[in-house]
Every structure is written in C-alpha cells, then in structure tokens.
Length: 113
Ligand SMILES: [Zn+2]
Image (cartoon, rainbow, N blue to C red):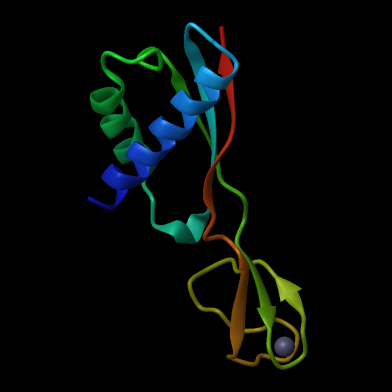
C-alpha cells in the first residue's frame, strides 16, 4: 500500500508537468528512490500500469535511479556508505549514526512528446 500512494503522486506530478508544457504524451519518468526508502521498483511499476491507464502517461517507461546510502558518524563526523546492515563507523567504530541520504523519493524529470 506504501507504493500505491507514492505511485499516485508520481503520476500526478508527471501529468502536471506534462500539462504545463502541453505535451501529448509522457514517454519516460525518471525517478530517484533511495535504498532506505523501502520502495520496491516492481511495485511502483505495477501500480503505475494500473493508475496510468487512460492518461497520457499510459505508455511511459519508468527509470529508477538508486543513489547510494550515505551515513555520518555522530561521534567523529566520518561520512561513509554502509556495505551491510550493520551500521558502525569505519573510523571510530561508534554506533551513533545519522542518515545523510538514502531515504529520498522524487520525480527527477520526465520526458514528453
Ligand atoms: Zn566515527
């Protein structure tokens, strides 16, 4: 269900942008979805097919970009990307970690005809 509402907003953003430039068709939607967002590409694609029916985005292909997770140690301020789910600072081995990026989810751009 998480992906359903996200896909609804992706579609409405795409349609709104397409409308602004008076496009007749949306051919591609470029999405940025962080690894930590918990969003599954296949679910978004599934819902998109369903939701975009009868819209000018019906034939659009979705392109998923997954930026790497970036974390910062609260103890020594080292910035790193985790290579597993065990988030420990590689510098000082401190366990207090904050998330810099990885939870994003947005429409980066669309391509229209
Ligand atoms: Zn550290």
